[in-house]
Amino acid sequence: MTIVRNSLVFILFGFTSVLSAGAAETLKIASFSTVLTEIAQEVGGTHVDVAGLVKPGQDPHEYQPSPSDLKEAGEAKLVLLSGKHLEHYLDKVQEATGGKAEAVAVGDSLPTLKLKAAPDEPEAKAAADPNGMIDDPHWWNSVSNVEKATNIVRDVLIKLNPADRGDYEKNANAYLAKLDTLNKWAKRKVAELPRDKRKLVTSHDAFQYLAKDYGFKIYAIEGVSTETEPSNRHVAELIDTIKSQQVKAIFLESTLNPKVSREITRESGAKIGGTLYADGLGAGDGMTYEGMVRHNISTIVDALK
Ligand SMILES: [Zn+2]
Image (cartoon, rainbow, N blue to C red; front, side, top):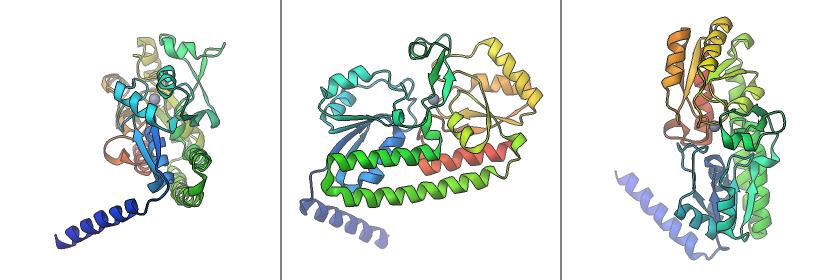
């Protein structure tokens, strides 16, 4: 107990002395992505004050900014967005900032995979190209995309606050080294699974970027968003696929109702392999990006073996 008390006093004391040192003004950031919130905190360190407006465990497809979220965005110097059309409330954010904040849709600068738009989903349809395809917004499920996102956040922080460049570069390098270790671990873990067993059946089509990095084939139960229920025909097709491909397990997601997935396991004989974090950080293991990836990869590989 004594040790705990002593370290707490030290932390408080250390914090006070940082404040009184009168360093450059902290940069206020509003983030609409749980993954970007972590990146901004890691890279910005003590130079930033990050308001994570989409919270871990919240479904970003259904999220709508509250009046207090818009107030936070209005006070920020930098607004971080996932991009790839995930934020369907962009007009509200723009109105809140009045064009005064730097707004960066990080995903828009990352490689894009395409998805078939769900036919009964008006928002997805509005963003679809003439072939009915939309940009897959789930870029954070690729570690190498998160490495690229870290570089983007580092560069915009340097642009907004060049005096703290050295710290941003040092922090970004430390975080990038962690991501590199994580990616190497994930590749070794996936290598435990023979290629013909890398078949991923999930509740909504959120793991294309992960699948591309690690050689999985995806069979999704829903379209891109969590807002639609799958059709009976789609469910029947999936049950056939699971049987013919001899898929051992399917996966639930932390932000979704598992009813349909359970029906599919009952009909197909596959087991529930576990719950995955599809839409960003979440409670439990998924409170950090590293924890989220380790949980997802371990759950997938161990269930499909
Ligand atoms: Zn999603």
